[in-house]
Structures are given as structure tokens and as C-alpha cells.
Image (tube, rainbow, N blue to C red):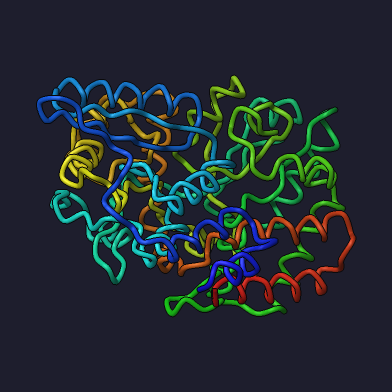
Length: 432
């Protein structure tokens, strides 16, 4: 693609998409970010996102690895989810990607399909179940290794429930009608607190679609729902806002992508919020309350119909441009297979995908980690099949969805208008 054509093609696009498209236009050479010192010493750069507690734990893991591997020095580079992907896409386009990358499923195919990731053929996956390995396997091979599993849940603040005089629901039987009634009552009964914050995207839409036997994207990489589905979804969420379930549109716009510490849930401003189970500790710490994980509501009142699934909490990948593919894989192997790393991570990156590590850390868990692990194991018989591996372009879904839901919440567009625009943009993103 000529340079002037490429510039026109990228103009006006979100930074993450623009940079990721550029990945395909730059030749990936072997001038990765890791450096060599004297006597064959190797330096690797490792990037991740997360809460403060994850940063501290990861630094401990790096220290432990460096001590066990004196010829390898891992240097950490971390930040928040909001800026992580723009930075990674820019670095990758400039052929300056980190040697080791904390990866998310929605971006996996986007990077793998452009040749930006290294096949992890030296990482031992023998102690992992098949689904954990499959979640990181694309048509190009094993491009990411699952660190752990989790599930999207409703996290409830028991102190706010008590203030409102509302009992915790039976989450194995509650419906969306129950959810709305509970949240509306709490909003009415407790000054300055709402019953729930807005939906966590794109998981909320995914769960809603799964309850209709549909998906956000299907196995062929196509959009898995229609305009009418999106219109119904938007209408139901708008009804919740008008019923006092959610805060007003201004508050929702501020609470779309914060970390646990800055969120309305973490600040104790809502009784219920959507979070992944591995975030239970961070949300509890931020709120100063032992938050309670609840199954998602369903339309039928049956837990088997609530649309929940085990998701790879996050993954570990390596840059195709690293100068040190063996050492990068050695660090990834340590992260996912070492009991030392497991005992430091506990459940922050999900309940460990390595079954031996999982068994080793279970007796060590207490507090939020123990509650998270028990919950994950308890819901296993009820869960559906995992989501299809997201197609390239899937990473744009969250921002597109959040933009259009705000159009609905602010009533600048009707649910039908927003649904049409959103579906059109999502289809274009997948086609790119």
C-alpha cells in the first residue's frame, strides 16, 4: 500500500485500530526490544495492564524469575487497560513491541493474523485442560497461553444491601425482573447510592446474546446477531436507566472503563457492578467491603440459562520480533507453570489454568481469593461452551458498543437508530 494511501486509510480511525493495521505494513525483523549484555546476559521487556495489586504481584514474580535465571533480566512495563492497547499497537507498528506481552482474547487474532506474535512451541501446556490451550490457539498455532480462567459476574456490596433492608438474591434462580426490582429499591432507599452501575462491555452484551442462543461474533468471524437484537438490548438497558436501576447518563459515561479503584463499584457508590471473578480482591480492597460474587440473572430463572462461560482471564504472548524467543518462552513458562508464580499471583490472573499449580495454591487462598476460587468451581456444571475465538477486528467492538449505548442513554438516538449504526460499524470492523 503506498504511503499516501495508507495515511488516508488510517485517518480518523481509533489509535489502536490504526496502529494494528500498520502491523501488517511493516516487516517484522529480529530487532526486538530485548538487549544483550556481557557474557551472554539477556534483557527482556514484559508489558501488562492491571490494578495496583497486580503490579505489585507481577514485580514479585519478575524478581523470583530473575533470581532463578541469573542470565535473564526481565524489566516490567505496565499501565491501565485504557491506554495499554494503543501503546502496544503503536510499539508493534514501530517494530518495538515488548518481548513478552500480556494478551487478551479479543486482540489475539488481530495480532496473530498479522504475524506479530511468536508461536509458543516451547511452552509446556501438558498440565492444562484442552479448553485453556484451545483458547490461545489460532490457525497459526499456539500464539498465547492462558494464565487462568474466570467468569463475568455481578459483584454485590452486602453493606449497601443491608442499609437498604434488601436481602441478597438467590442467584441460582433470579431473573432480570428480580435484578431490576432489587436495584430500583436500593436506589430509592439509600441516599447517594444507585442499585447498579451500567453494563460491563462487551461481556454484558455477550451474556445477553448467549441467553438468546446467539453470539457477538461467530466461529466464522461474522457478526452473530442482527439489528433487531441490538435494538431490543438497548431498549432494555434504557428502561433500567429510567427505572432508577442505573445512574444517570453522565455518571455512566464516566464509569465505562475505570479500574476497580476508580469505579463506582470500588467507591461504594453502587450496590452491584459487573466484574470478572479475578477482580474480586481488587474491588473488595477498593470498596473496603467483602464483595459477594453473584451469578448473572437470566430470563428463565435457571442458572443454566444465564449465558455465563469460562473465559481466559488473560494470556501470555511473545513478540515475533523478539531477539530472544527461547528466553521469552522460558519466562512465559515460568508465569503459567511455576508454583512460585502461582503462589504470588493466586487468582489475580484467574484461577490457574495449570491444574497442578491450581491444586497447589488452593490451600493458600483466603479472603477474596478463596471466595473467587470457590465460586468459579461451584458454577462449572452450569456453564455453557466458551465464546468463539474473536476474529480480527473484534477489539473495536467494545468502543463501538460503548459509544452507541451512550447515544441511547443520553437519548440522542433511539434504540433502533443506535442498533442500526452499531451493527453497520461492527460489520465494517470485522471486514477490515
